Length: 125
Image (tube, rainbow, N blue to C red; front, side, top):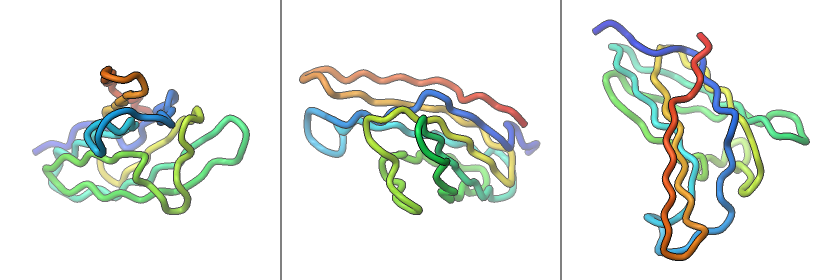
């Protein structure tokens, strides 16, 4: 199959909710990247996180196997350090193979309310 997507993606509006209501893990607030590798080669991706008041952190390394999807909860990334909850951030994902990237947020701060937002990230290359 012909590879689709891009090798560089940007999400400028990240902010993992610091508080959640409901049972874990289903009702834990999160920011997540949904990665599609429709090509025939595995993709080695790196994510660098940018904050308002400090130098960028990363890279966080992620593999996306050929002809597969992978959902990466940013809450779960801990190496080189956990992404800070409740703080605005942006991130740049670069990949060895073209990917399609969707950004998703689940916000459960209000009791009984699950707010889910999906957007396609910005492709730059």
